Length: 113
Length: 111
Image (cartoon, rainbow over all chains, first blue to last red; front, side):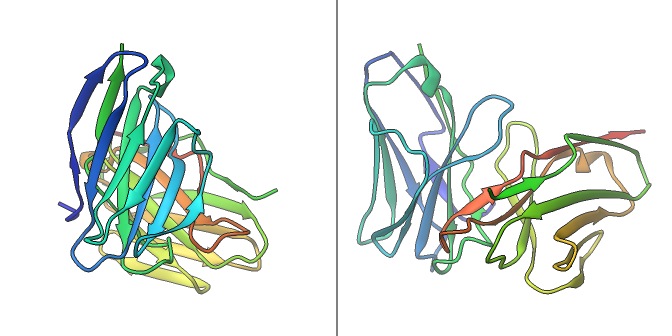
C-alpha cells in the first residue's frame, strides 16, 4: 500500500459523458501527478501539481482538466468522453516538486461504452 | 530528441540473476529512476540513481554510468513474483517536474 488513494476503482460510462476521478496523496506529499495507461501501453504523463499550482503539462487533451485543492487532494475531470479514453488512470505523489521518486495509487479503470 | 531505450522483453529462470538495461539520450540529465509494474497493477518505485555506481536494495540493485549514458536494474535470486514490467525513467529535458518513461521491459520468469 503506497498511501495514495484513488476513487473510484472502476468506472463505466457512455460516450459523451463527463467523469471526475479523485486522488489523495500520501500524507506529507505536496506533488500530485496524473497518468493515463491504455491496454498494454506505457505511462502517458498528463499533468503535475505542486502545492496547488500546475507545474508541468503533458499531452493532456483539452477535454481533460485537473486541479489540486488546498487540502492537496486532486481531481481529474474527463469530459465528452470517447471510446479511446478507456484506460487506467493513475495518480502518483511525491514529497517535493522533483518527479524522480513517485508513489502511485491503485488506479481508476475507466471504460467508455 | 530525448529518449530512453530498454529491451521489450527479457526471459530468465527462477533463482537466476537478470539485468535489464536502459540507455538514454538527453541533455541536462539528473538521474535514472526504476519502477516495477505487475499486470493490472500500479507502478511501484524501486530506485533512483543520481550518481554513478551501484545502489543495492535487497535482491534489487541499480547501476548508473553517466559517461556511457547507460543504466541497468539487476535482479538476483529471481522469484516468480518478480514477473512484471520494469520501466526506467528520467526527467524531461525542459522540465524539472516531469518524467520521461521508457517503453518498459517485460520480465518473464520460467520455473
